[in-house]
Image (tube, rainbow, N blue to C red; front, side, top):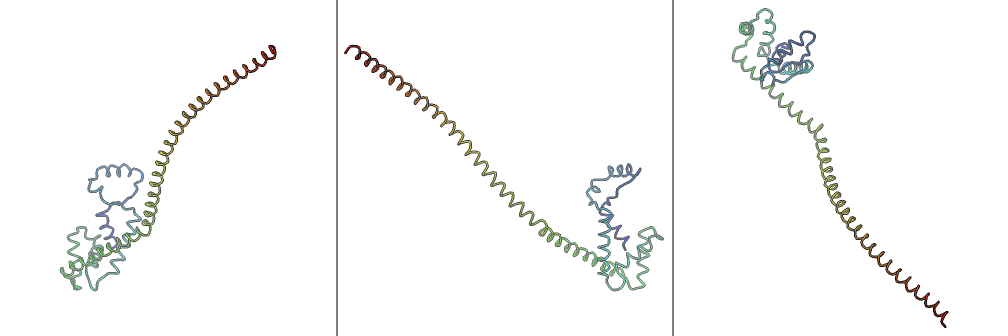
Length: 216
């Protein structure tokens, strides 16, 4: 059954097997010649293939129905493979050997559907568990990411506002600097005028004092 599962998996996935030596060139050539459909197939490592093979093997064994059925049919198919290479002939031989144990075509097909439904339910369970793990492992991080993004957006908004305020302040500072220089120039001009007038008055009085002393 294990070999059957591995073959079944290989039908729909690509085994990621690293090539060695001269096989590298052959592998590269095979890879380049793959169709787009083949390239779209999922790629599994050897370890992943072994893991899923064991999982489905255990799943089928746990769900093994009473009497000969699809499960025993494929076990018989595997046992006959070395002696009967043709799959069609092997199917007929396997079915004939199980007919004596009570297996008929209707039961074979019915149990095949049952095993398929078991796999479908396992898939549903797996996806539900995966979603739960996503919520546990990723949900918190996504929430933190969203919070940090909102905080950064708010900080960027504040930075933009501060930059506007700084630009406005710098503009006002330039205006104030011009006004300071203008007022300072006016004050200095008045100061110079006053000092000149005051010194002229002092000089006039000093001159009057000298004249009065001489004349009177």
